[in-house]
Amino acid sequence: MSTTSATPPPPPPTQSAAATAAAPPAQGRRLIAVLLLVPALVALALWAFAWPAARTAPHDLPVGVAGNAAAAAGVQQQLQQREGAFEVHRYADEAAARDAIEKRDVYGAVVVTERGPKLLTATAASPLVAQLLQQAVTAQVPEGARVVTDDVVAAPAADPRGATLSSSVLPMAIAGVAAGGVVTMLGLRGMRAVFALVGAAALVGIVATALTHSWLGALTGDWWTEAGALGLSTLAVSAAAAGLAALVGPAGIGVVALAVVLLGNPFSGVTSAPELLPEPVGLIGRLLPPGAGGSLVRSVAFFDGARAMWPAVILGIWAAVGLVLVLLGGLRGRKRQAPAAERRPEPVPVG
Image 1 (spheres, rainbow, N blue to C red):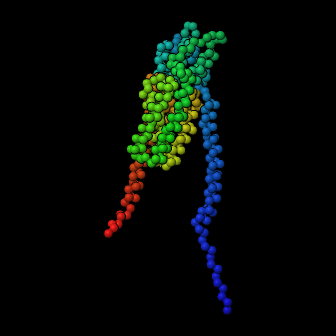
Image 2 (image 1 turned 60 degrees about the vertical axis):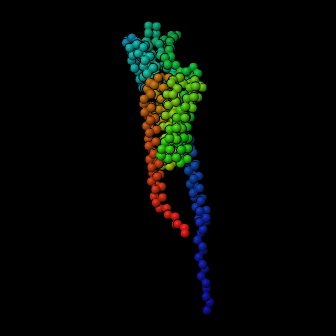
Image 3 (image 1 turned 180 degrees about the vertical axis):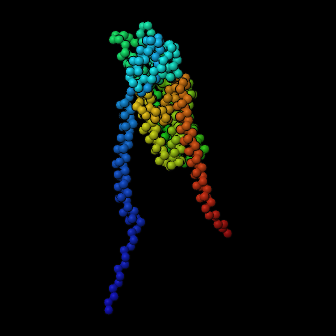
């Protein structure tokens, strides 16, 4: 009688073999994610930068009309023929129109005089708007007539086109994201993180003012007020990045970077004016740190702080919410560490 021995079952796959078998599907999913994510980001970037630029036109742009009631009414009617383009404000005389420009109530004004229309502009508010108003008023006067133009609040001679201010928006946003990222990567929490964020923002404001005001001569306001405005612009971004990272992890830094760099920069309207961007881009840009920061710096640098309250409040809200999240993240980290310390076994005495 013969006996047959049973064939032993094959050994279970080792952990490395199982990981190798699972690796191709995981890498395939990552490959698909990259192929979909990169074009999506490119499309978003093109939309954010190209669309507002291609649709640049006045949308309820505040301008003034001053002078004789009957003649001024004709100018106002001509401006209002472009429906939705201009928001016309009436003023009794040239002095009132100048005061409105200096307070940033309007970008410019047309003063009707016996010799013809006189255009008041403010290149410090927006060189592009000043050029647009020049073209609009010139097109309405008889052929050969000359329009007298007076730049009430002129841009600095060292930066007549406002290029320095508009070029500072992106570096301030990048500096904020970098500061928030460094604080997160170094593991700073609680009050230490708050002190690091505030201190870094203050130093960024001082350095930026030294470059733009003292060296380039592109800003002409109070030096320390400008430094405070630039520092607050940086703190709004850095606190938001560090705070969101404390709440949801390092991915929060990427979310803030996309919001302020990819959207906030082209939506800021600093290179033109928020009223020249299509809606709701202009409104969104004013609520994001780059747009609010650019408006605040422009107010304190050229208009003695006129219209500075609203952008300062927006930046303050961003900074305050971010710092609160940083503190809450520090408290949550302490609560996690406390149970772990309680579970740690006590050392056994020797001898």
